[in-house]
Image 1 (cartoon, rainbow, N blue to C red):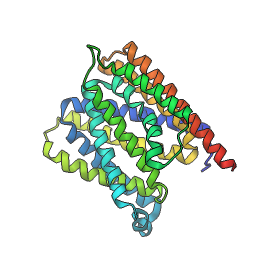
Image 2 (cartoon, one colour):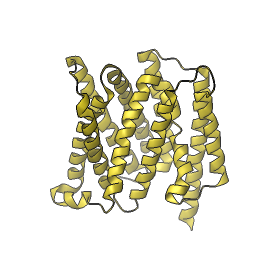
Image 3 (cartoon, helix red, strand yellow):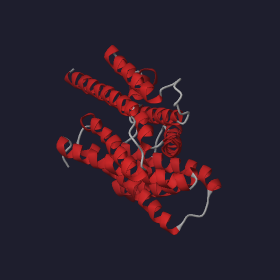
Image 4 (cartoon, helix red, strand yellow):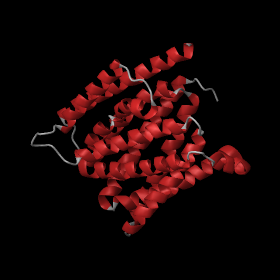
Length: 296
């Protein structure tokens, strides 16, 4: 398949964000009824099975052992633990804070990645990107409104979730210097499943028959979203399609309003808009820098 079909990549990225938005909506529903740890654990069982099957299909049984081999096993396991922990924290934020505000805050994670890329990866961060990060921080403060009487301490759960995902993204970029995407994908699912099971098994509770259907859909959307994301990055450059990941905020907001009766507060919309603009600017700067380096 072509590696530079940007139009198809954009369509796939938008589809990916829609599937992930559905996943978040179902997570909010189930997390509001059952223990979040158990919900994430069952979701990870399916996810781990999916990554194992995917790795085998990509490499064949003979090449499977070589494919999952890594010289960075502690980092790969840490990545998996971080993502599993981040999902638990994110679902808690969906339940306690609501989908709209949680996602508005979570949209700041690309700016956190940009800010941490220097000390963690040794990347050079110029003044323009620092300015965008500062603007995004202002947007987050507008959403959080610290010191205001309406400030919710649950907002910090969403901030922690964004920070955890940013660190996970940085570690993913770091291990990609030596390991293939299939190797990283495998260890993400398997190690995350181990942690989710170790925690979630202590919170098991009976689930209604109808909610098992929702759990099944949650597992399918999780695996389906990752599959679409893989296909997206197969046909287009990440820098070209990444800005369209913000469509997830739009889809999530629609689901939150229509299904859960949430409202879009003016300060949340304003803050999210500022964060998105700042994030798009950082994506653009990274793309320009990559083009300059390619010419050298």
